[in-house]
Image (spheres, one colour):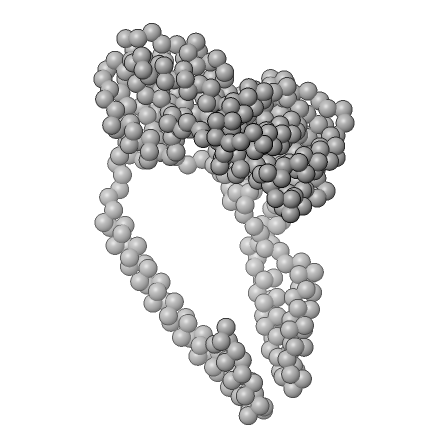
Length: 472
């Protein structure tokens, strides 16, 4: 900051000493500085290229590469795209094409003039001349970019094809794949999910009523939330949760993964704050939870297994929408009573009950609410899921103590377990008391779990393997 002030003062002094030739002198200075900067970055780029060449020469190429990337675009319709259109679609949904609008240039000119008027009157005209030249150069450079002009033309063709064929572009569940799908097919998949999970329609939007309810509840939670903070936890102009669907391309019939946007919902800010409070007051048993792939790999390497051991992978089906709210509230209350006073427990449970009851969302203008479950993607939903799944810990501990299970771990809704085949074991009877599991089918000879790849040995039962192998 001080250096900028010094340069600014020197600039004014020089302009006062040489008012007639200062523009020429400044142009020569700028050219010399530009040459020095270009020379400096040229040397840096040459050094970087040498280092990259040395690294590539010293790094051995893998003998066999496993396909881990996802396709950029998948077309589930009968719409035919040209090569140029497919190339643009493959750039991804986050690709940004430059198109400065007329308002952008007007704002830039206004802001430049505003800055010039802050200078001394004698310096304003020379700086206007400089700014005009720079703006003209910038304007001509931007509008001479033929690539972006062509891309905008191609994008209009793509939009016309998609719109005229009543299709849309959706996101895939994994990777950054763009999926082109008919709008009716997308809607049918969402309605199938809603029907399978017993969602019912709500005739009237309860957002305004719930907004008033959460405000009244916060007024009675002075033990856990400072009253001065209540205004920051209250949502202004709330709207209901909105449902979007990510397409699971790796599943049969391309099921959906529901994603609920709740940033403008009445309970979003309060749920985020309560999630922090709850994690500080509840002590969860995390011995069967894995954090990342490194931790899992270290645990598996240290296992003593033999040919009698078998490995299962299970997936909890639609975890959040199948959580039993009342059972979860009872377990949370028990946890809180063990480590907190009655007043703190009461206020946390009152606020938690208010938030969990507001588990509705809107889709295509209609409000839906499940018979059970918590709102997906709410800041507190993950904590509620972990508390709910604590119900199975006693069963897991019994199976491990009885030497039926040799290993069990869970990452969110994915479960990996190893058991001794000499013992009778049934995943459905032992674990399916509280949640629904689904066996995963894989067409490749490897199946993934938390970024680790496991070989499938038995083709007739792809979920079971005889040995655990962690690739190096």
